[in-house]
Amino acid sequence: MLNKAGLTAMQDAILFILMVSISGAILMPAFTNPTIMKGYMEREKDELVDEALLVLLATTKNEFSYILADETIKEALGGLGENEFGRGILYWLVGRTEYHKTYSQLIAECLSCQFMIPVGEEKFKCNFLVSGFESSLKENISQQLKIILGDKYSFNFTAIWNPILGIPFGGKISVGEPPPSSNVYVARTWITIPYIVEVGAEENKIILTTSQLRKLIENNVFYKNTIGLLDKLPKNEEGWEKLRNDLTENITDLLFSLIFDGTNDMKGLLHLCLDVLFEEIKNYVKGIVSEFTESVGKPVMTIIDELLRAIVNKILEKIDIEMEANENVDEEYVEKLIDGLVNYFRKGIIEGTISLLQPVKGYFEKLIEKFVDYIIDLIKQGADGIEEQIFDWTINRISITKAEVRLALWEV
Image 1: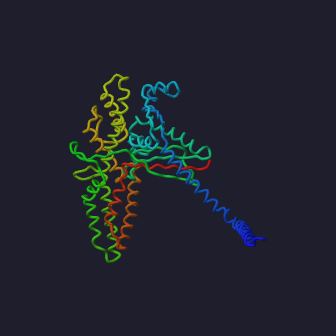
Image 2: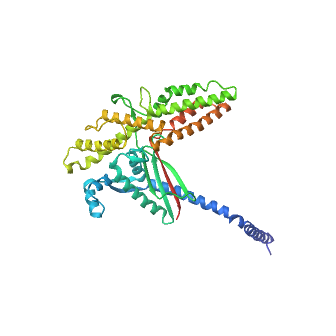
Image 3: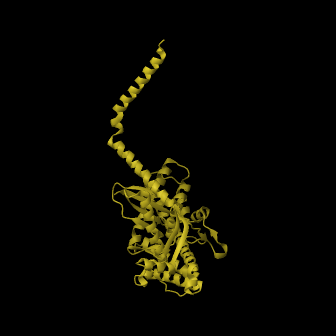
């Protein structure tokens, strides 16, 4: 006997499949629309560049070799090192190898000991010893990205460390050709700079933390003035304009006083950053000297002093600081050098006497103007936590322990 229920179910299934097929045929043009396909491809490339950057930073380099101050030594020795035999001799004399470090760690180390400062139209890297580290790292980054991306894409990798955002000093690495103006896919993230900033007298030093920065900011007279302005609400447009001007003036003074002046208990942030940078150079020099001091037959401290003096003399050659070269690069001399550099930055930014520092004042003016507009809107809305917003904005200008890395790629 014929199972009519089974036949009906089969007919329903066939009809359902037929309807789905017809619907697919009708909707197919929507799925193959050029705009949709373009969006899908762009998302795919966005994911590709994000993944490529993260893979690069996480990749471990089992052996990373470089020659100290390679450019300076090659120049001094008349081109030795241009061929494989010469490079072998240089590596035997002043070569170093680091083991089992990720590219993120190598990049952070390179950025943190360059001591890059703006001089005229260029960014001068004071620590000439790190030139071999940088050139070898750039070559390795380029090779690794070619392995990750293949031949289909060109790329530009850039890592920038500015301890105080907006002021062009610290460190920078750039690999690859400049990206075109369109059809470029960019990924960015942050890496950690392994710094611990200490403040206070030698016998009573403390680690600079967010709570210490809060104390530094809250004790600042311009911060107190800024918070005091929030107590009385204006009653007319003229009052709002006066509040806007007063906030702009006090926040500007707050920022520049924190950067340049500090307080009785703590140096300004620029001084602290430069102090940390020079300390990192000293540690870097001590580290490299300990590895080859026996082969050159000189006491460790003699070589360290000679190399530090060479770095300081390079700085004094490039920057007009009212101090003379000294045989002994002791703490007192370094303190005078850093004070001179702080005044150099202050003059260059506020008076606009240095080309690369001229845009900094304008950068801060626009930044502060935008932030004041935001604060005025919050006041008008009756929002809570405005004081905390001002503190957070101020402290976010500081980036001592992190550097930005970016990867741009485009089709060849």
